[in-house]
Image 1 (tube, rainbow, N blue to C red):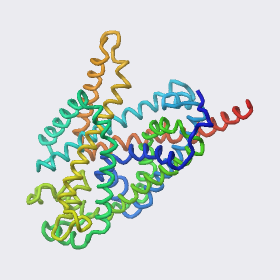
Image 2 (cartoon, rainbow, N blue to C red; image 1 turned 30 degrees about the vertical axis):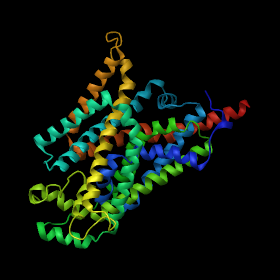
Image 3 (cartoon, rainbow, N blue to C red; image 1 turned 180 degrees about the vertical axis):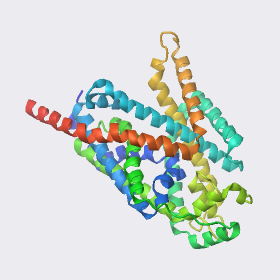
Length: 416
């Protein structure tokens, strides 16, 4: 059913609310940890400040195209939108495959990320048996929360997101203003480190940082289609613009800071925890922001000159852990709601039992994938899904959605 256009919103305040849905989906634990930023931007050097803006600018255009198409066609969910977009209705499965795999990968990366945060917090090496043990602990927490506390987690997710954004902003600002020369000299002399050089591959930097990153972030399209239903066409455009500015700006600032620190962070990672045995948390191979915060812990280095680094690091670690766990629980709930109706309904009559079984399967898959580690998941799962989304999500937006929208608008105009 078409929306009543007279009641639709178009103001910047309403557009900001919709743009915040995209921002909340993007800026989660994986972003805050710095892992994605290092892999797709910072390790290539100073192009990392520009490419996030390009990637999110292109994604903002794709978001606008798809939100506009859904609104013109009268759809309020991604399934109906993509069923009508593709040449054949059954081809909607192509988007469904992308969405489910990305969600599972996000959950697995959250398990791995939470496991590593916990291991670093406890001073346990996140390798081998330590990795399995920590990830099993996270799985146990997920099962308990999925059964008893999903409503609490969902209610707290907004507060957690706001908290981690604020603390991450403090750490990014501190990282940009810190005396990196002094810190680098202290670490290199103390541990005989060799600074890591940037990867010199401009073509690959553009391909991964702009095209692939933009494409696998198309996972934010479904919530944006749903969130924009009360927006007018003007409001949809404003939401896309604000979303591009918010996400691109945050990503560019984070990339700027981590690019500045990349040579030292890479050296810490290469040295390994054995070389830094005096402080087992001084290196965090897949949590760059944690590693850099520990590096700030040398004498006379405090966050904003007021709050001690250790205090901020503990707060950040707690928030990051909660963000990872919250992501897992909410996404598990989403998949349970999506598939429990299809899980042998003729055999298993109890809806709660079907939901519990779907949840068990989802968490089991995520645990197995989580053993790849946060770096592996971000590199391979997200990377390959970026290629997939380029073909089945990004290109169809330009090739199919634009002409279909124009045709539908012309038909609506002619019918008046």
